[in-house]
Length: 408
Image 1 (cartoon, one colour):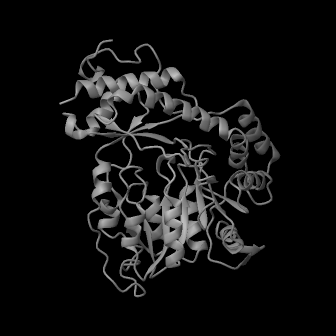
Image 2 (cartoon, helix red, strand yellow):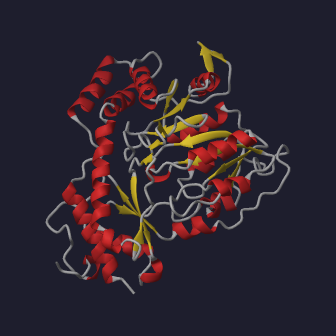
Image 3 (cartoon, helix red, strand yellow):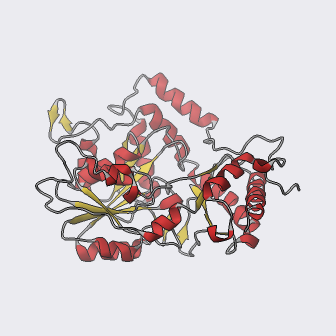
């Protein structure tokens, strides 16, 4: 094997093969159900059958009483916050190492995001840091199961119960992940799902809110559809966050093979870990899998040992992509507490929610060393259900070639 990386003039690992890039797994049955929904002429969730069918199957799969489909994962978070009554004067704690919506939906609810640091071993929010972030204004915690890895829910639920806080599980990347025998999303007060094309199952765009709470489910249904309880009778200030019928038909079809999707992602990840074992704890480390979790494998996260590599993380990613591993990517290079939308305190006009009269204190965001450490070191491989064992071996070869070449 030519050890010179392709970015330095060598022959790419996947020379002669298609680049490894993510594609959703769409079957003939998926297409048939979408066509059926289109041919029905009933394209909206109002009066349709596919949204109801998807909600029922999600509830059954996750073991919760209610699932409410919505237009996307961001809408799911917004609906969850509003259904719990989060609003002006409230603080919500979340992780800084995640997609922006986990924090910006708090702002859209006219509440204030407060960031707790992460655990370096799992890259998820740290329960100890949550404790330190709680104030008399804290109303909820948004727990993100990052990359498909379940957060430490026992400790988080204990804190929430002792302090009287709601827990929202952001499972956008983790549908199908399991923590101590329970599906994530079913453990807290509310769970939120995303069905974006790269997620465990897809509806193109789409999401859902799941809960065992009767009142939260009722409010979520109203909030997603203008707060309407009867024709032109509006009880709540709601939104149009409905999912279309053809999206729901696709999600229903995909959900039937979710366990196969996860099994395929697990296979890829297992091969990758086995192939990279000899450079682990030297040039790289991975979030360690604990015996009481099942990872959903949205991303395979590689934490670079930058002290032993003579280039930065972005050069490593570009080098992997040059080898034909286009699934290599950088996610969340800027922790949310350092993003301009947070630092500049972007608002809804006239300072709200930051200077809302119900709030009454100035927010400052302190450094979060673990999140900042991780943000400059993580290389992510976006895992697709169509990847093969050969794809995993090629990916491992590319990682070993690039990191060995750039070793100090």
